[in-house]
Image (cartoon, rainbow, N blue to C red; front, side, top):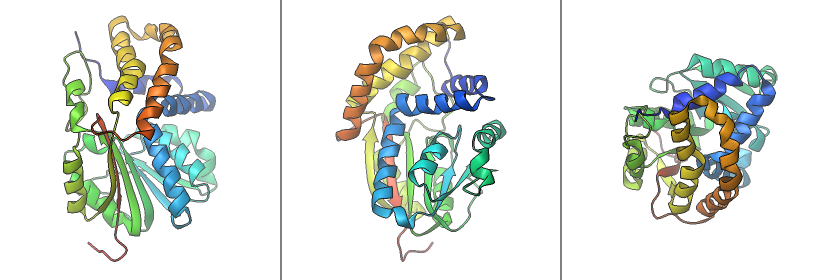
Length: 277
């Protein structure tokens, strides 16, 4: 069986809704609902807002992709400025279309940048979701993010964990876009410290319950589309009639529980108030 590339499937969906703000809004809602990493990231963002919200005024979305988290950041940190950077022109153009109002009123800036070279001081918070696994020189990126933060600033990343290798290496499945399978707790802790950060919280995501939900919501439908072609999208609603509610319950369990292992990993780190690099 031929492999299915995960990001190109998402790209194809994004292309369909490119010129419609309403369809793109639905696309963002679907990503937030179906992708467990969004549940975990939004949970941490709300906690940061509650505890440190008044100190987070300038935010960097490092590798913003489709712009899903830009929308979340703008909503949660409703008084903050968000800068979104990525290397892909089509992603950036789509985001400029959707976030035109936010750019015009000065709440947002969208710019092409390579994270291997980009560092700009005065950020209070940097978000980097499912980006570092694509970059061989990941510590170099972390150092750039460290140097872009104000003292006391926070860095939040999410990535596949080293335990995702089973899925990544499956000859029926999918991810051929990654520089590494993922990170262990020990690995990401060491790399964050090399960059100068103090790790605050490191936890596995997509544990037993979350991974089961991911198989039902994402993996099996992707394999199905690979078998039958893209017209199979028309049949997916019938699948989700039976799998959506159980999957959402499993995802909720993943976010409120403590996973001893998982195929995803989330790390929150902080730049010391006194530390310089």
